[in-house]
Length: 62
Image (cartoon, rainbow, N blue to C red; front, side, top):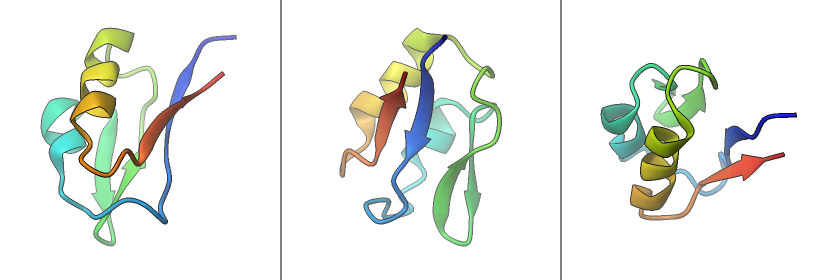
């Protein structure tokens, strides 16, 4: 089973960095990031969004 990104809504501050990094994976919904297409970018691109999240709201789920 492939890894998929998940956003913790309790941690997300709505900074939109993940959307800027991977717009085909992340989208803003009510000022929180949500996953719209977990296969919309490479694992490396999604990892960049994870690494750039200032509140560590995005993680991998196996």
